[in-house]
Length: 377
Image (cartoon, rainbow, N blue to C red; front, side, top):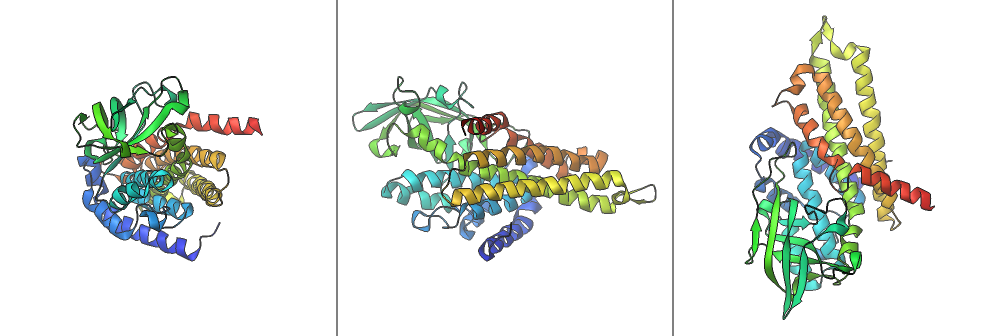
C-alpha cells in the first residue's frame, strides 16, 4: 500500500522531527516525567497537531491516512509525544464536527498551536469501558449549567487549561441523556488531583479532574444537549487508528533497535545476528509490524472514504497494540540483560507499549466490537 507524494513528505518531516528533536530527550522525559511544552510548541509551528482537521477549522487540512503516518513517526521517537498529538486530534475533531463558529475560533486554533492544553474527560471510577456508567452531572440553571463530578485517569489533567467533559443531563435517558461541556479549568469549583506516576508513557500527564458545582455559561455546551455520548463515540474510530499507529511506531522503534544491537553484539566469536534464533525473532517482528501498519492504513482509507470504518479501526487497534507489546518484549529479549536495564530504549518501549492495549477501548472491547459486527452481518 504505497503512500502519495504528500503523505511521503509529511512522513519524512515527522521522522526528521522525531530523530532530531524527540528521540534525543526521550529517556530524560521518561525519567523525569516532564511535560515537554517546548516540543509541543515546535509541533504547533510545524502543523503536526490537528492533522486531519479542516484548515478552516484550525487544522492542517489533510486526511486520516496522513494522521496515522504522523502518529507512527512521532511514536517511533517517543509515544508520550504522539499521545499528545492524538489528544489534540480528538478535541479539534469534536470542535470541527460539532462546535459553533465562536467555539472553533476560541479553541481550535490555540489547541493546534499548543497555546491551549486540553483534556478529554470521559472515564470515572465506575465508568471505564462502560461509558453509560458515568455519574458526573450537569444541571440546567439560569444562564447556563451547573457541573459536578469527578473524572479519573484523564490525559493532560494536571496541566489542562480546558476540559471537554461528558456529563449526564438526564438520569432517565441513558445514552441519550448526556452532553459535552467545554470547561475552563480556572473556573471556581474546578480542581486537579496529583499527577499519577505511570508504568510507561511517563511524560504524558495523567490525573484527576474534580468539578464541584461549577457554573458554566450556555455556550459551554458543545453540540446538541442530548447527543454527547454519540458525539464522543463518533470520534473514537479516528482515535483508535491513532493509537494503532502509535503502537506501530513503538514496535518499529523496537525492531530498529534490535536489528542494530544484533549486528553489534558479539557472542561465541560472532554477531548474534548470525544466529537463526535471533534472525527468526527479527523476521517475526518485521512481518507483524508491516501487517499492523497495513491494517492501520486500510482503516484510515476507509475513514477517508466516508464509509463505516468501525470494525476496521477496532481490528487495527487490537492487532497493532498486541504486536507492540509482544515485539517490544522481543526487542528486550534480543538485548538480553541489557534490555532489562533503565536507560536502554527497549526497556522504555516495553513499558510504553502496554497502555496501548488498554486506552481508547481495551482490546477485549475491540474484540467485542469486531464480533458484534461479524454476527450482525
